[in-house]
Image (cartoon, rainbow, N blue to C red):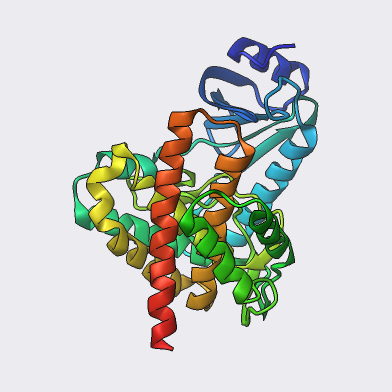
Amino acid sequence: MDRFSCERLQDALAAGGVARQVVVHRQVASRDNSAVFLGTAAGGSADRLAIKCCYLPGTNLNKKKTAEMQYLALASVHSALASVPTCFRVPVPEFFERKLAAYAMSWIDGQSMTELMRSCSSRTRLLHSIERIGGWLGSFHAAGPIRHGLARLSDQASELDAMHKAPVDNRYFLEGVLLLRSENFGTASGMTSLSWLHGDCKTDNFLLTDSDVVVGIDVAIAYENAVEMDLAMFLNDLALRLWTPAFARLAWAEAGLRNAFLKGYSVTGPPFDPALLQRLRLWSALGLWYNYVMVQKLGMVRRWYLNRCFSGLVRRLLKAESISDRGR
């Protein structure tokens, strides 16, 4: 069976017994593992809905368990953020339809940070917006099951071993792997803040509204670990994005955007370890690089381009690590 069209999804929701009469207007996003539709419904807390259907990646088979986990995660975070300032939110969970592997949430009229970076020429607005996103992430971590403890990095250390056995043919990749292995990455981390994690922390997944509210989307909270993991993911995504042609005009602003993001996080979030953050950024960059170049089957041009982007990022992270070592 093909994936849902608007008409088929609307009919299926009605047949499934959803209490509210939903009209599905159009599909607004499609990915390997999901599709999102814009709908309207009478009653409830939201008139306009984002309806997400979950699929087994690369297939038309619906993924009921994934949809249920995502809906429950959204409900948990929505409840937890009710006690923080109203400027940091997630969409309101509306309903879950297990048979369809679909769930609905309030529609957010907003612009993603990615879209803002693509279109905005105001340095002040960009810095303010990314600082607010840092504030959202800090509030999210603080609202979770926060505690102080050791980062759990055994899985990351195992992945590092695999990279060492079959490395990318690049000087900086090998230097990064050897550096982390020499520091006993996985066992040498100190105490830090542990909480639930967003899990897909990137500029695409933060919406900014006209009323200056930041809305986080696609929140997984599938596991708990060092908060630096989310921070590292966001900062690496930002750095790599600024290397692409669409955002090259902002490459000069990377340090300012990074500092503004961490400033916002520090105001609302738990304490974090800058040294651990730096090492997790390096590990995360190496892991992404390895996955793209060694695991995925890419064309020659795409492989060359990604090698160039990741080589630049890892080189800069190694340089920062060297400066940090000299300062200790």
